[in-house]
Image 1 (cartoon, rainbow, N blue to C red):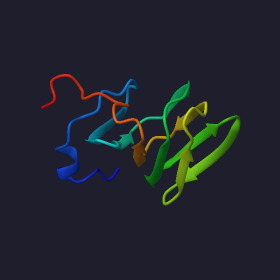
Image 2 (image 1 turned 90 degrees about the horizontal axis):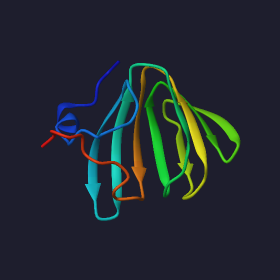
Image 3 (image 1 turned 180 degrees about the horizontal axis):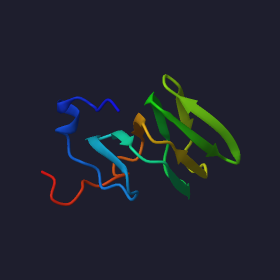
Length: 113
């Protein structure tokens, strides 16, 4: 799997709750950008939060948004409206850039500076 460039990996690492999923945070006053990747298949249980927009850089993800399942692959974008219940199946080799309207959606991983 191609990795994100060094200057992205120099960002604070995100404290993500899934084994095999890792990411780096770019936080601002209006939201957070998460550069994320997975080297394993994993399931993300249903949850909700503020608006989320993403673009798939590599691999694929199955997203169920409000009960409707869609598959997204390299070059596809997706939008999850605020409060919409959604879940996902992330496939090994997945890489994406996600923008969250919640500026505190994720915390920095402990020990990251």
